Amino acid sequence: MSLILPDPFIEQMRRQLQEEADAFFRSYQQPRTHGLRFHMHKLSSTSPSLQKQLVELFDLTPVPWCSTGYYYPEQSRPGKHPLHAAGAYYIQEPSAMSAVELLGPEPGDVILDLAAAPGGKSTHIADKLQGQGLLIANEIHPARAKILSENIERMGIANAIVVCAAPQQLADRFPRFFDKMMIDAPCSGEGMFRKDPNAIHEWSPSHVEMCAARQLDILRAAVTMLKPGGRLAYSTCTFNELENEQTVAALLTGFPNLRLLRTERIWPHRKQGEGHFVAVLAMEPDGEPSTGQDGCSEKAIRDKGAPAKSKRNAKPEQEAMRLFARLADTIGGAGFMAGLQHALGDGEPLLFGDQLYWLPSGPAGSLHPELLRGLKVLRPGLHLAGIKKDRAEPSHALALALRGALAELPPRLALTAGLAERYLRGETLEADGAPNGWTLATLAGLPLGWGKVSGGTFKNHYPKGLRWP
Ligand code: SAM
Image (cartoon, rainbow, N blue to C red; front, side):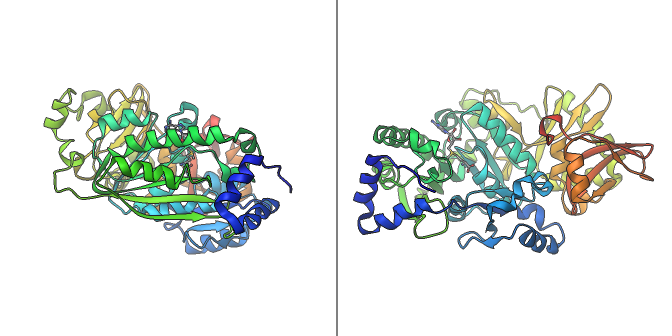
């Protein structure tokens, strides 16, 4: 493989890397690396042997800086396996896994992923949250936000809200709100050259400068959303110092309370990965009450001009929840609804048109629904069901969010990998002897989606837009 690199890029990297530059340029003759990350929130609820099977099936070897990350050889093609559709793992470039490891999300944190599509860092953060706490995953570009939302659904994440907003729009309504933030900024993509040679054509010194200016704008808006004592990770997949160390230095000059904790770089000539830069910064605890807690009180919301009353217990929502509870009873018996409510935790039902969601309220009720008003929200928590006139139909997101004992309550059609592929293509399957009604299609204990059994036939309800060709 031989890539033609722009002369100014070669000069820039020679200046930056000095005697290491030749080794760096030689890495462009090597094939790119491929990686995937186990999604433990799902895998930990299945037999431990499944992880071993995945390691053998895809010939996986561990990524040193991420305990759930693995390299795979290109020919393994894990993205084409039905367990990918079940959310067992996320395909992610290995060096990109370092960012969330360094951010260190913990269960119960309130986290913002500001530039989140397609969802590599968001799904990694959600895995570390283990269903506790809250993730707001934001993407400014609508088409990319849709892909992000689909990935949040595929990984069965219930405590995430997917929004499509500019950083300043979020900064205006979430001052000092988040415990942790991920800012995986748009960059000149010098670490993408092996993966996507088009990135080489888009590269120029002026593009690097434009990216650095944009990164600083994004970071300046982001920092205002960090709680005192909070922490943020800034990352890029580019090598130049202007977009990395110098951007961080420029940010620090404007925020005396912000402290640089560490920076890390993964270089393709030193480690097995395409390359990444991560800086971890912390906001000093300043002793003042954080708006992250106070800002969500009824009073604070009134002061911001939003109506004080939540839509909690609004009638249409109550009626939709009644229909959903009836459906849940039919699907999984008396314990299913109670188990679901326990798993989902505090929150409230929310109707988006005829679609019912469970909007998480965040730790200590920090996410007042009014905070989302006027924002473009693609996924306000877990999508539970579609509401028809007098009944509810289970959503695809609900199937994928079921895990452990909860996934064992509905009737299941356990598929082989071959049958799972047929299910994902939308085919009708046989279900001899199975009771009529909503049934979960599963593979290796993980839900793939719903079907409806009638007279020994399993009618496919895998969403049309997601079906395999
Ligand atoms: N974090 C993602 C992941 O791990 O899958 C990758 C994010 S990518 C490096 C950067 C994202 O920033 C892109 O999705 C891009 O659309 C978004 N973006 C572009 N301009 C932006 C801006 N001005 N503010 C915020 N995000 C922006």
